[in-house]
Image (cartoon, rainbow, N blue to C red):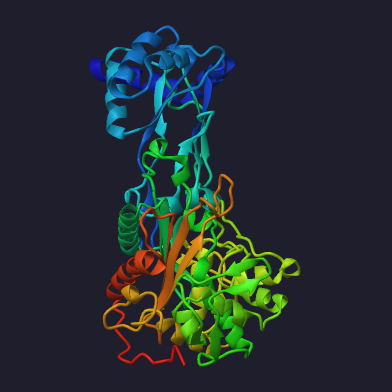
Length: 570
């Protein structure tokens, strides 16, 4: 009975302290400025591919924070414990633990939970107070360099107050991904220990939204590896490859090389962080002839069987336009002009269009305009105002020199030919992912009819002759499938000055398959190859390999129809 009586006294006193007098103690602590406020980081939304595979996600981690009022005297001992288990600098830790006139200091960010537990246990064993942990989610990129140029990365902000989105989707859609941070306020005693029942407040963070891309991770992986092989085999400066669904203009793969690992952005060459397919402009060369041909056919100026007499060179005042192959006088059909990629024949045919009319068609195909992908650094390219066109400038524009594009622009323009002449703005983001897994689109891509379906179909038949025997790219053919394509080889402007003289070449190949029922559009571009290759021999095989892989992956069968034969000569 005596023991029960004594324990009853203890229990009553505990109730008195923790319940009745707790508010008074909290007020006393506030009087001595022992209230501490910290930020609660909001879990950042994930970035996933079209099937939900994570390309960027947030994992559990913790931050170590300190109250310098209570760590100042023991700073060397505390710093030694933390430095032993992290990469933090011992001297910087000591400085932060002794931060003058402050009740709060960040020590280490994004520490794995097991590391944080070890550190806190050792500090407790040594009786070292004033260090706390809070949630500090860690951003990781489980796919490594796959789609890194699109996804981007996070980097620490200069004031250590969280992370900043630095590139790609992380940057472009940061407002949706980041969520809203919360805050917590708590009270400590004179030893820096939190008073559990003291007055406190917690404003819970709101998680960010998950973002679903249109990218297919498996196809993206293959496209990047095949592109890397092509860049290395040809000794090119760089390369890009884009695969698109022509019906929706959703980008299924967008490969850049060289690339980087977003888990280690500090080791990356800054030139390799953005997407060259979106940011880099170049003169497209003969792939542009497909758009000129579509304009001519839609305007009723030519047909595939139109007969043309080509001179050995086209005289334009003091200038001369030549073809990539030497020849005397040639008798080609317009289909033959495209199949043989004749600059002379294309320029002669384009004379039948007024500059304003050709310009209208080209802008309809998206040239000289932003694609509205919403990505940082996107370029609109250059399409000169038609009022400035001389006859020579119209000639060069008709066959892909004197204007500039990026790879996504050119892919989307080819997609319009594959989609019955209808241009649809390309998309890289499907939308935000709800808790139920449903995707809410961010926007509805705009579209417009550029040429008639009949004109687009006629151009597609002409493009098939490019991959046939007698065309410029039989190496781009895919066994069992009808393939429409076009080569491109253009002089590069030297970025250091000097015009075209030392700029080298841009080689490319773009097309779609099956040609008579297009399901996939693929475009490949290589910059300044060191080896002596052109669009057909250098980029054509890359196109064939990537497109063939995609056809098999999506189970797209051959149409079983025969390619129409068009006369190339007369």
